[in-house]
Image 1 (cartoon, rainbow, N blue to C red):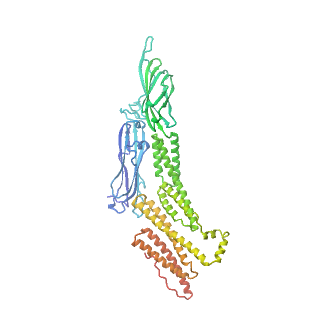
Image 2: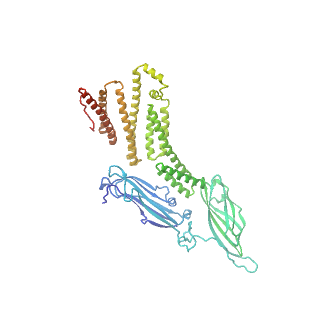
Image 3: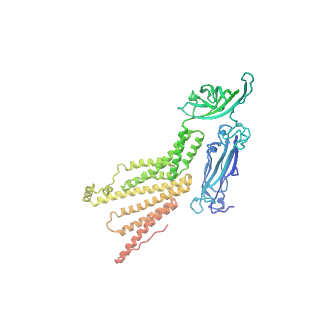
Length: 613
């Protein structure tokens, strides 16, 4: 049994077990198995449970795009790990017997797994601190090597030259060289032995705009010409391709000529990859004459976005992620989109590059747009509050949107914040507060002041009473809203596992601070309403407030202990606020008692209920 002060994770690549692996570039499947586990069990200690554990593979694009199941997740999250069972996350590298294998090159690729989680040994969730830090990782270096046994494939970077042992592949062929004389005495040119050459090329055509490309035919020979060359094409949709010219009379030494390849039926060439085979047959004429045959394999990509535009998208995506990182935004979603963009670029799937860039850019704009709207709405709410305008519906939407924003769901937060802005405009439209206008514009409203003074003190009192009651109603609604939002945050964290404990703590702290301010404001407004009609009798008003605070403390105790309507930390905060205000009221009463005692008066002692939970 392992003894630790709390949860402790272990994450490793189980298969292969070594830190390095050499893979021959030949058709085959290779399995990679990794796990994460809690090395201590809950049964051995109450604090041994690991919470919100995140476990991930990080792969190069060459490996990720060649997984047997490219749609499978490379990351997983566990809300709890409470025993020592290994939790596996695996994938299979599939080297197929096709051009996806040929496009690989010998070299090193580094992949890794990483994990982190939270423990609760102190009563507060905190990142588990392992001997290597809070983030565990295990790294594997994969070396791709040319396969020196015939298998019909010649990957990029491998060589026909057997003296180059590290890159030798017997399936690779040497380029054509100058032919030697094949005899021919007397008068005539006899036919010699033929030669064969294989080469490859890639072309990209923008669908709907480009329908042709130039294919270069080279003669690498320094002292012989290639003559009477006939050209044929085969492969996918070859019947819808025309060649111009179909024959070439002569290509001189160390020179080349182009032929034009035209797609005659573009409708048959939708977005994708097409493999075409061009065969060239003719004669090599130098000191002697012999036949030759060359095959050029052409990979034709029909794309809907150009490579140049895709590169612009990648550059812009990196810049936007850097900006978001500098502003402290949540980056996991945009980084995932960037990874998809990079792998799609490698696969010449430029339309997917564009699609993922648009998704990334949407999050980028929503993140910064949300940040600006939150500041704008809070400024607007303060403006409305100063004028006594009720904006409770705006606050409802804003507080929910803020929680979503802090969780990193910027698209949904931005949508809600725009709704909040519209709601705010509707709530403040046409609202007018007489007291505020008199205070801010005394010159323009002097006539109104004189009229009010001429009528009665009761009119002023009535106006204030209306304003206070309206303010009190707004505060009551905001308190209920904040309590409801706290319940939503709890459900999102403990029932749906949509929020981490860190996000939960931040959201609850924010709502608790707002709740404290609302309760304090409400107590002050209630005191003003109670004293509004009293010109004298300060002690009596303080006694009435004292009794009101005691009633409020009893109500919150009943809501917590009997009805279970509020959670412990909310109850403690509310009780603390009421208790603090009660202390101030009782201090003022004691001061009055002492003052009256000095004048020879007898004032009944004040009974305190503070601190009785």
